[in-house]
Length: 151
Image 1 (cartoon, rainbow, N blue to C red):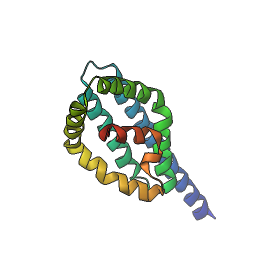
Image 2: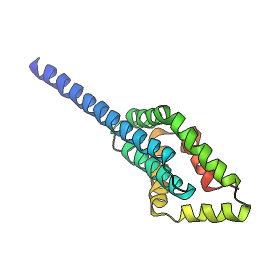
Image 3: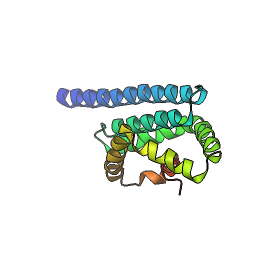
Image 4: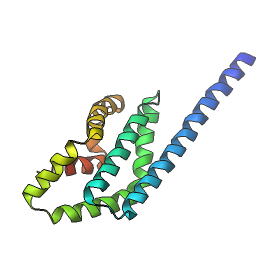
């Protein structure tokens, strides 16, 4: 009987640790994204920052043993940062509208050559397989992927 109780306590502590870790990570993502919105930097640097945060979100989501927690991590990120991401996307869209087609293509190629994009593109299929869902279906990530391929 005491082993069962100890097992239950252990499982509860593990769940609690995952929740605490998730909350800490989510707060850090929010802080990073809010600083991007207010930063006086160019569009490419904002895209760099967004891509790096997205890569971290997806990388860290894979650290959870359960598919449920992986999806929860991604959904919490999306819910918590929806407004901030909308602000960032509006800033990026506004700057991209000022570009002609050649500049947009050059911008996309420049972003696609960044080292974090390879990491991001490597992790996307792994996350999709784990959660049995396309990342493009998660609106925040889908919109980002459209910026990478504006045509």
